[in-house]
Image 1 (cartoon, rainbow, N blue to C red):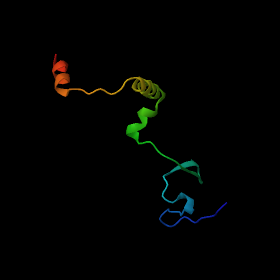
Image 2: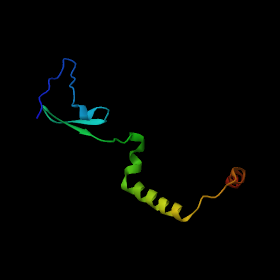
Image 3: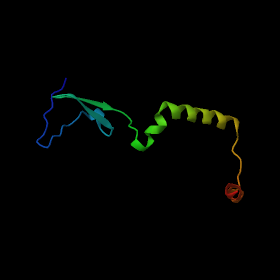
Image 4: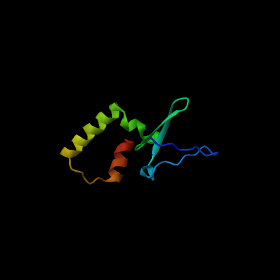
Amino acid sequence: MEIRKVSSKSQITLPKEFAGKMVSIEKLADGVIQIKTGQFIPDSEKIFHMEKYKKRLNKFDKWMDKHAPEKSNLDDFLINAEK
């Protein structure tokens, strides 16, 4: 266990192993915080990590494995879309 002093600006220095990493800081109770390193998902991308969407993306990946990309004509697509 290490003892660190919190500065007058509410800052602490973490050990070098945390340098350059993203951390989450969670208050567990009065006087107790937990610091974790990790990769964090932006709010705008959280939906893609829901089970419903994971299944849809996996299904799409399987479909892509069986279907090669095809060249498309955007003009034809737009004409058909207007009908």
